[in-house]
Length: 225
Image (cartoon, rainbow, N blue to C red; front, side, top):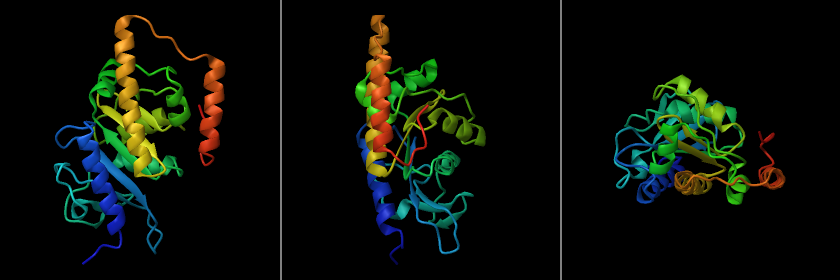
């Protein structure tokens, strides 16, 4: 029987396979979700990757639909262990339609080092909204982690998860995946530049102008920190 969310579940599975192919995760780490339209009863819903399933062969039938209490609405598998993180972001950011959590190498280096990425590339400010911040530490799968990452995200589209990885969000799955790729690229640039001993940040007036562009492109976001 075809799911009423077949298209959304297919898109989540395709994005998970792309995330794996692009080297943003290893093994079964990381996770992907998309916000769904509320149920007829008004329940807030998401479609999320399951726990412990390989991404390279993931299919639509593997994707789990849950409510925001992480109760399964459709699916046979266990939803991602980081489902609380996805819910916390959706609740804090009505503009977000998709969330991707990665374990890519260079963003994980910064997660371990506790280093925020300052404003060093124009495209990061325009597309992510400002510096990429490292969250306070929270135990994996906990409400504390979910809240700390949501705080670090603020009104931007990416954050680094302390001692863990990174998260990227977007209006849809395509944008969230692009954001995650950009986070990994700027993380690699920042790590190499730091090793060279010099970081030249963008001028404040450039950051201000590019944040204005970000706000213009994302009118549903109330502000930029």
